[in-house]
Image (tube, rainbow, N blue to C red; front, side, top):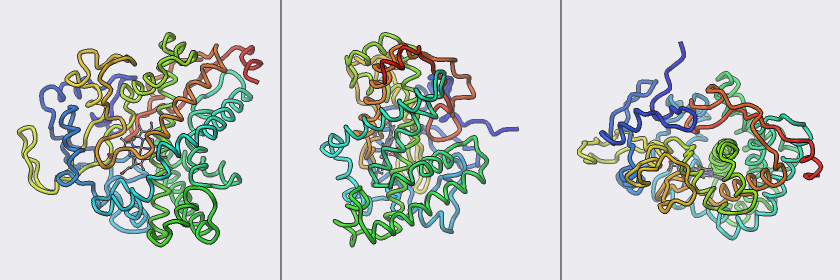
Length: 411
Ligand code: HEM
């Protein structure tokens, strides 16, 4: 018998579990037992989620590690061993102050508004190449395989400075380690290969720095960061930027194809930033962010959280909270007035790659809508195509089709 999906990961298409909505209304700070037996607090309303994420001194990140990267994020990570070592070193999401600030300062320049603006032609080139390759594969095609997975993977390769010859395998490993449908042994192997690749890559960048992010980091701050931390940092950029963006691209395209007037807006370049922002809120692909741990006894929403207890913040539930987004919180409405969603988190761990993700989303939707105007769903995704067993909600595949005339227009 398969393990039931815990409430904070369950979705019905784009809809959240009604039980999550009930909790948000009646018990926004509630106890939850995870399938591995861990007891946690689940926070479900917008105000409390913000409060927890904004107070890293009280609700710190978990330096002990917690998620097993090859086991759907439910089981604890091994207490020792090579995985553990890399988990802790350089995984900024598990750092607390002051170490968090030190590492964030080293990584942040690669994601500044100026740097992301410079990346635009590069991202648009990657999007065009992936579109070409999907068109060459012929209609109907799997948008996830040809378009939404390779775009973030290639973007991260460019960012890090991974050589061209390594990119196909880089993408394969990144995909396999996160594919919850693959057996655990296959995922673990991909994880080890991926980490080993990073170890070798960092060693070669130390010896001969390239002009990518890692090469520049080594040249400018090489003495402030050790090799383990560099491996962990490169790895967390892959982990943080790959699956999240890929699923936003796939689910976002699905939603837009189902709402033709918004798709037409994207094609005509109207309200595109608003549409991207509302997709982030409405779809909220990151289900909880990293677990927080109470550093002291603290009362919140009338509940006593004891030092050492773990807390999960439901970002989708917060982002659908009628108290923050009015009664139409469940409706996709790009021109809504309150845009303060938490899809990228909040506070010191706010997503480092937010501007890059927005750029990838804008470029991808616009390229699809403009170059394949007849694009439509070849079939509606069945319930088992939605990925609900990992901390990132997504789509395993999305079959789309288009008219042959589009191919001529696109070439
Ligand atoms: C639409 C796509 C994305 C979404 C929805 C997303 C979401 C998030 C969220 C919710 C957090 C905060 C987690 C927490 O507080 O526990 C986060 C952190 C982070 N994200 Fe993203 N992310 C996306 C894309 C990216 C990209 C493209 C990159 C880089 C290539 C990236 C790198 C990171 C990093 C390094 C952190 C940790 C920051 C820290 O701990 O200080 N993300 N992301």
